[in-house]
Length: 466
Image (cartoon, rainbow, N blue to C red; front, side, top):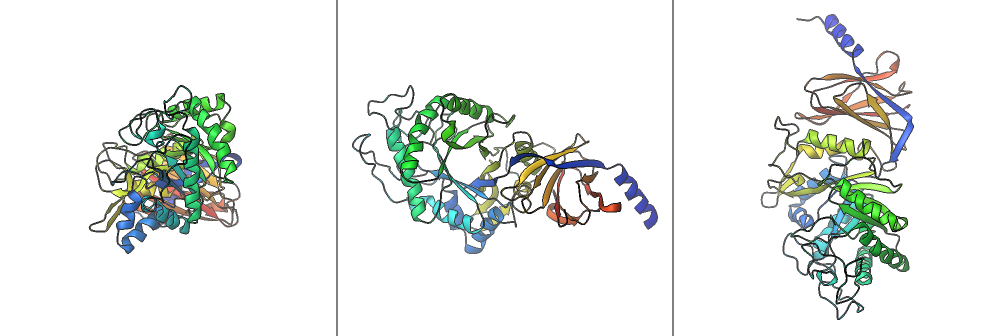
């Protein structure tokens, strides 16, 4: 058996060989807006149907520091003429007499599939941004006369319809929707009019090129302004990074980027890569996985739904693609075999089961990073470590260290002016969910040292004195 002195000597020797994580607070990158999720397609209804204790558990997991700490909520702006489960009903489901006629508005159906209720609950728990996005215009406004299976908005480039140009009517509907929410005390900060416009799907969908998106933006922007709304336009939720890049390039070429407030993309068809050529906020607004049901942090099969996989996905979004915000698809959903939710719920038994993917998101949520934080330079000498760092406006610093190797690694955090600081650590892996610890500041307090187990995510949180 090792003596205490010998064991201490081995520990010091290990730290002397520690991988150094170097953080430079003077090298700044993008500003952080937050992380988030959606409960569109009536998943907000499912959450509402839970018993009160279970319902609050889900909401706290999603929107407080007890869980993911999301600060962005993405709602679905409906286009369906009816609302069986899994559809989002329009506020103007019946076609008017003509494209120039006033739309036949109805009150928000079922409080917008309980998205009004969810928005209020999210805001009460500290959500900063509400993003409303339409998957399609109403069918009578489109070339294919249905809100499903793609088709184009009548009146944009190369989309001529016998019924005329429906761009103004669609813009008016979007404004009316924003005003409906305002009447209920909810400000919609960003609004989108497309979802995955490069695809035609059996659910609500509408296709668009960048030029066609520009054709609508130049109608929507003045309509918002004339209504006295400061909601900013988002576009275009491309199904993948390169699909979105193509549409953004078209919008820029046709001089409508000036009317955008937010660039949005998904992570499906092409993995997020090099940053977009824009100074606008950039959010990855939908991404999920579709493999077998999985609660695990790491599997030898390497499932895309593993918690560790999502830790690396989020790291790459911020550190490589320079996003200012990241949103997973559904926050909470019924248990199924597609891994579309971060939390699985059962409205019959009131069970609430978070996945390890949710805990991966928590390391990039408001427990550690607040709105207005700036990503700062962070690097390591180890090929198996992915590291990111964020400086908060209150002087605290968060550093995420992902160990992708099987072996534990000793890490020394090199951050200027650590002396006098408190450095807490938070560990997530197969056996831990944000388990709190304390880093060893070492001799002279120049470096904060900790051990990161294999296949794990460890966050350093530096406060006080720094």
